[in-house]
Length: 211
Image (cartoon, rainbow, N blue to C red; front, side, top):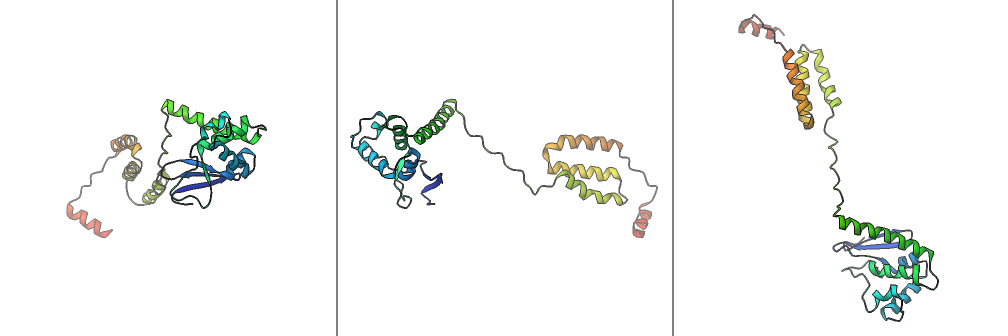
C-alpha cells in the first residue's frame, strides 16, 4: 500500500482512495467485474463516452471529462476510474445497455443505498459517535484491593482501621465511587472508638520495645 493511495480488494474488485483528499475509485478490471462484462468492453465504453459517440443518458456526464483518478503516485499500473464515473458505467449496464447485467443492478442498489444514507446523514447533521476510551486494564479492581488488605486482618489492627484504609484505596482507584465511599467512611467512623490506655509515655515505650 502506497502512502499516497489506499488499496483494498473485495470479491476480485479493486477499490482505491487517495489518502490526502479522500477521492475514491475502482480499477477498470474491478469495474468490469461489478458490471459483469470484460475488461476491454469497459475500456471501449469509456473511450466512446468521452468522445460523445454514445447518446445515452447515463453516460452523458463522461463526455469530454477527465474521469481517471490521479494520485501523486498511482498504484502500480492500475488505471483507476473515479467513483462518479464508475457510477455512470454501472448505471449504464444496469439500466441502459442493450443487455442489462444482473451484477450491475446489484452494484447499483448497493451504491444507491450507501449514497442515500450519507445524504440523509448530512441533511440531519448526524456525525459518527467518537469511540469511548477503553478502561486502563492495569488499574486494580475492587476484588484486587480486597485481596491486598485481606492479609492485614491477622495482625492486631482494628478491623475498622483496615476497612477505612480499604475504602480510601477504592475511592482513589474508582473516582465515581467517592460519594459512596465517603458515606461509608462516615458511618464507619461513628462506630470507631479508640480505647484509652492508662500508661505513661515511658511505659508505652517499654511495651513497644518488648514487641
